Amino acid sequence: MCKDVEELLRMRAVAEEKFGKELVAIARRSGGHTEISTLRASFEQLKAEIENTGTQHILLSGMIKEEVQKIAVFREHQREQRKKLEEIIEKVQKPIEALHKKTMESKRCYEQRCKEADESEHCVERKNSPAATTTHRQTERVLNRARLCRQAARLAEKQLMWNVEQLDKIRQDWESTYRSTCEVFQQQEVDRIKMLRCVLWDHCNQLSMQCVKDDECYEEARKVLEQCDTTTDNNCFIQMRRTSFSPPSKSPPSSPSPFRQGPLYSSHSVCSLPEVTVAQDHLSGAFVTQEHGETEDEKYKVLYAYEAQDSDELSITCGEIVMITEQGDDGWWTARKGDLIGLVPGTYLIKV
Image (cartoon, rainbow, N blue to C red; front, side, top):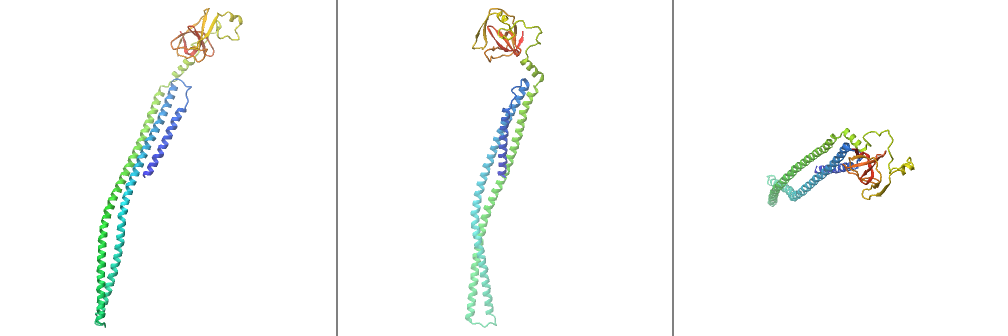
């Protein structure tokens, strides 16, 4: 039974370890990076709790393996103890078997001597009968033979009694040894049953605790899911992706941007623009300009910080006021901050 329980726990430990590693791998492979706001937070929390659950199952596998090791040590200890007792019983068993065999031989010898003595005595009775015609010498011979047979029977009886006494003494020692050995075996059985019962009980407790830990992890995910709100996510998307606060006016634009010259711009309109000197700023990736004319710019406040990713973009920080010189249809607006001009995301700004 110890081996059966040991094998069961070993297989369960392997299954728990495999399950835990699979959960960790699933949590790390899952995507969801394109989602935003509260729904993304809920998904990230669920992935974190799944990974945490997998880690807990791996730890449970380690605890089960420790229980398996305890059973193996206990089983080996009992095996060695049982082997020593069996050797003692074997040493006591051999002499008693030999003496028992010797006693049975002496019993057969005694029975044979008694039979011979009885026959010789019957022969004497026949010789002493009045009808018998025997000489004195023949009678003496028969009497001597009967006497010798009776002596041999008495000697055989004494030998048999001595062997029986010795066998009884050895039997008592053997019974005492065997009784103490049986008591040890019984105690081993009691210890084995108690140990296996405790191991199985602890295993059930470990599984129950794992279920509680799993539920606690999922409860944390549910708490974050309770904060998931459609209105909040929609507003977040609008704040990130909107191009303006109102639809564009139907009136044509006042003047083209000097940095966004298109095929519709005529040569004389380009020549009529103010003279601009451009130099690349290696730190911000924007353009340093010196304007000799004035243009009508709109003031916008920065809602979210943005780090320039290209040479024609402008880095902005939250709370800054920038001047917008052009609003592109692709969502990128031309902004001016001091002597720096570059492209910024229009959804990151709000009009002052």
